[in-house]
Image 1 (cartoon, rainbow, N blue to C red):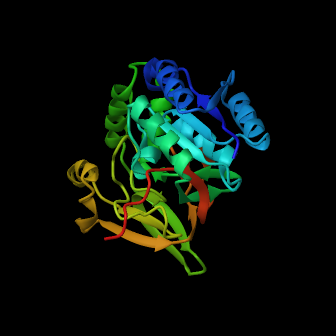
Image 2 (cartoon, rainbow, N blue to C red):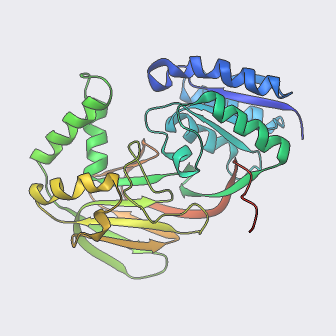
Length: 302
């Protein structure tokens, strides 16, 4: 394997922490004997083009420095290629790195892990979701949660997480159940009303909200969390439990499992890894071992 590594950097991630995190990460990797090349685009499309060029040229690894948005771009470049993916997670959410058990907001620790994994040949084969030509690592959101994203993205004030807290309050005020049609694998169509349907390759979204707490990255299937139609008071009781992953015990919450999911609903945008996919209907497939993630060495057997 070549000793050249591509550092895929989002300078604005984590409110400007991206640029600062790239320097110590690159230093650790160079001290470990690797040649580090930076990949920085003028926008998302240009960044992805440059990342794909680096992968096609045979880079030894693509290391995403940023949050879930940057990691999502890196997935588009590395999925199905065999090129290892490293993550220096310094964004706001970091749900993909969290699902893989990688260091969060510690670029030196993350870079050391990447160097050790490269030297030892330690990668973890991780499942990914795919909708059309787009790959995702964590959760595909649809319904109340995606509408909060929609509203938050339209708001110009305030900045940061408070924007989405206010968006959530506004969506709660107008909460209405959504008529869904759902098909799992080759099964029959199901029709029901729900507040949201979340398709989990990983467990969490929104910076650790464990909406699909039983999801695993290596089982070839999604966990699908359905929050059935309910009022504002019930949702306010259920939603805080998402952080602990205990909401699945509520009678208005059900969990389904499938390798392929078709979701239909009018007026709903799907989001995956925090990025908009477009309006439903959407079909999501779980692709086993779609990407090789640079990860800690496995624990020795007892």
